[in-house]
Image (cartoon, rainbow, N blue to C red; front, side, top):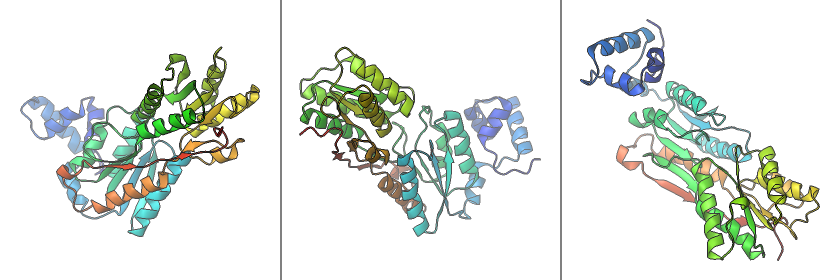
Length: 341
């Protein structure tokens, strides 16, 4: 028998090319599973050294004093600040942090979640990968009373803690600011994945509707990735229109910076001819000339609150207590890229 107590039902499912639900039922002698399959699953589980969840949960009685953090990447300023908030809060209580990156890949996220579970983390904080639609790989934490917090990029329907900003209100505020500065034809650079981008877009649309401004498909550009290159492509597309926009709300600062630079290369004056506002208050927003107006995004605070939730619920977590959603406020940070008045 392989000496490996970190084997999960996902590993067995992969070995046998069966669904994880089938493996789970077979290990419990469920009547819907054939005797032949049950024997095969149990034999493979024994060979691989699988430890049932009940025993694994017992093994967790020896605290590892670690919190797992699963994020898309450490290179984005927002996520770096998030990690800092988590780490500072955890260390104050004698806990350490294990950081893993999904690189916005669903497959890597599943693999990293399995690794964190096998590492006996005391809790997990996750910001979902862009590709993630199915979140069943997090069930193993909830079913074993391991505190789980989703932060920023969160699933719509998952019975656990979530720490987010009000993305709808933030999108509305950003668009309203451009309207207040006299913009009448406002474009939006966004992404076609993730609930947070959809909410920011919804805020943008409602602000236009309430002020009787045009909503046109050509003024909304979806990115395939949140990068400078994609932002540059979107900005050039918008600024090449015969009736180009006089304002751009970008769902990220990196795209807002690309809009400012594209405008300058074309001889379009910012903010006189084109007002631009971004999102996140990344360091780059203060380096670009003119400085980029943006929406504050309390990354470090979100990290602190996520860690506090984990620490608070390490001993008292119950399944009927995990529906809490923490909303943090955002503000418009007005700089020269949009200041017309």
